[in-house]
Image 1 (cartoon, rainbow, N blue to C red):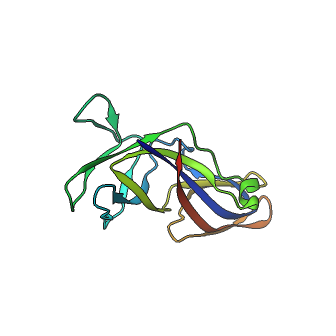
Image 2: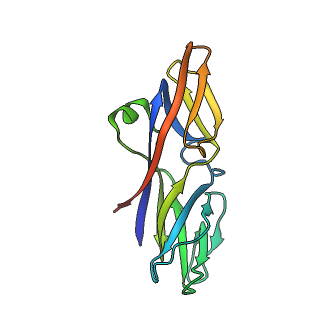
Length: 166
């Protein structure tokens, strides 16, 4: 069992609290990333999608997981299980310090995560309190104008890492 924390980083200009639309444990938010087989090293051609609201029963044993996938090269099964409750929004303070904010914890068995893809479905708020919903980060940035605060707001240089945690 290897747990990986997905951690995100971005430059936030006049913004704070970047997170999925329904919060860090949003059951409808989809996480997209590539997987590397732990057995043969084959990397998936397409991105894999997982979300908290999609679960499947485990074939061997009890319980559920969020994804069971077979490696197309060697045929071995692997699972991805999401563990909510450990993420928090990327704040202005974390952004200014250049640190990563924890977003979601995953338990990978038989796979290793690679290349998280930022997509749509994010929310963020200006330092003046204006909320921006449905933010699309698939292009890597977001720019808007905060009428209330009378200032430009921007998200740029988004990046993500998967960090092994114990």
